[in-house]
Length: 301
Image (cartoon, rainbow, N blue to C red):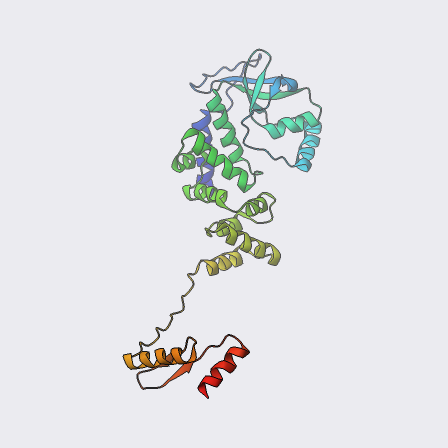
């Protein structure tokens, strides 16, 4: 199953990037193979770091500082093994399509030039490629992935089915990620900060009320609940509360009603008369104060 999924992922990327696999290049770095129709590859080249501008529509916004430092140290020792992908804006300027983390780490490593795949792409193709590339990365948190999926739906009118085909994921997986966007803000922050796993988040997404989501989330954190325990807790909140059946008061006969009216008139308070079919019952005489009680007692005496 894992093999099939890997194959699907490869297909998804190629369907979007139109054969991004490296084509053979001549000594001058020009591509020898035939360019594709929509995202023609110009080749791999060493490009000045200062000539590359970041994609303003980059879906990823958070980068782990420690991880960047580690990657930077590796680049200092071994160079950048995997080139970034850019598109050419003019003779001196390039715009990043994918690989911002590698670009940032290369700058930290004080590189002046960086290897890059140079491609031709429209603004829409570039944004879509960046989104797909980010989704495929393992270091994205679940909320970032959810935002990427939503952008593909909102900006490119892609259906969940189409996204599923392009990224090589099941449609149910896409749906589960999108449900995270309906969670309480505090729960979303917990996902970003890895306080809870995707399994916890999926369980919490089953609760429609955001206030309840927050309450359950706090209990999960405080008690360090497992995913299974969280699912059981959510199930308890989802159970419909049983309404207590209120027993209907027996209807008084006309004779009893007349007695009740007479007592209310004589005692000057809202007397309640209760009686069952067997003739058993009680008389309730309410009073508002000690003085009122004394007044009623005097009348009774």
